[in-house]
Image 1: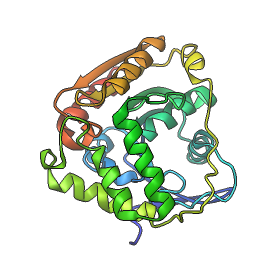
Image 2: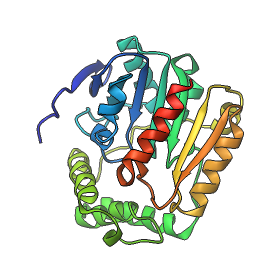
Image 3: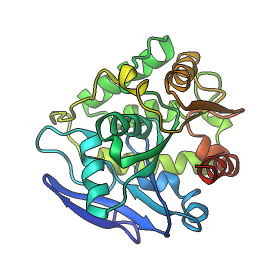
Length: 271
C-alpha cells in the first residue's frame, strides 16, 4: 500500500512519523484508534479544515509511520511533532487509543494542549474487567502470538458493533475501511516483536488538576464499563462534560459522522 495523498513525514529520533496537515487557523489534532491510521477521520477532515488547521498523525507503529526500535511514549511523539510544526497549544481529539494519547499529552505536556475531546476512551490507567472486553483481549493475544491474522481481524472487528449487536448491523463500507487500515498496520509487525511503548501512569489524579475544557463523547451502545469510566473522566476534569450519541458503538465518527462532526464543531466554536 502506498502512502495516502498529502501525507508528510516528521523525522523523529526513531524513524519517520507520518501526518496529514491541512487547512488553516487554530490547530486541531485528530488522533486515531488502535491498529488503524489517520484515514479513520476522513469523514471529518474536510469540514474541520474549512475552519481550522487539521493535523492527523499516524501513531508510531501504525499506518505509514515507522515502528519503534527503542522505548517511547505516545505523548512524547505527539509533543515532538507539535513543536516541529509550531502547532501548540492545540485541541486534541482522540478516538479510543487516540483518546488515551490525548489525556497522556494533557498531563505530560500541558503547555501544548488547549482542549481535549475523547471518544470511546478514558485514560491509560483504566483496565476493563467486563467479560466481553476480557474475551476480546484474550483473543487478540492468542491470535497475535500464533500469527493468526484472520482470527485477530475477526476479534478486532467485533469491537465495531459492540456487545449488543453483530457485524450485520454495521454498514459494510465501515467494516471494509477498518479492515483495510488494520491489515495494513498489522502487516508492519511480527509475532515476536517487542512492545516498546511505555505507558503513562497516575493519570486520574493529574487530570483532576488540569482545567482545560474536556469533552467526552461516547456511543450509547458501548459496554457499561467503558461508559461508566468515561463519565468518571468527565466528572474528574475541572472543566469536563460528556455527550452520548445514541445507537452507535465504538466508532461514532464512522457510524454517525454528521452528528459527530456537529458535536465536535459546536465544542470547538465556543473555545
